[in-house]
Structure formats: structure tokens, C-alpha cells
Image (cartoon, rainbow, N blue to C red; front, side, top):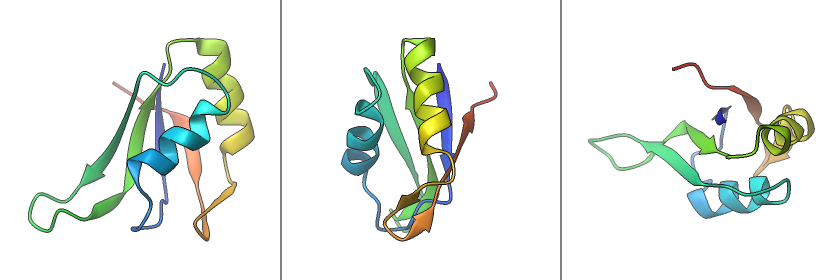
Length: 79
């Protein structure tokens, strides 16, 4: 299942996101979206978790929690 993580601090790294979601299960991929011109974070990322139960648990537990002084929002990504 692919999750969209929004409202990330611009300083948040892929490793930090990966570590956070790995607490709830296996993470296949974590892609922090970067601005093509500046190379800096755009403030959102996609996390892919193969197990839907683990993904739903991560979504439930991480939505509107604090990460690097930002309240992140997690939802199921639309294709």
C-alpha cells in the first residue's frame, strides 16, 4: 500500500521517514519529493508498505503526530 505523508519539515530526511514507518512494519520504499531546481524537500513523501494491515496501523498511529516540529498528515495515496 502506498501512503502519502504531507506537511513534513523541509529538513526531514528519507531515513527519518523510513525509520518512523518501519516501527509499524516493513517499508519497501520511501521517496521524499525534492524540488528539481533547488534539490530541497517539497514537504511531502510517499511510503510503500507491502502489508496492508501494517500500513493501516502506521497511518492510524502516525497521522497528525509530530515529526521535527511539524504535525504530519498521513493518508492513502491515490494513483
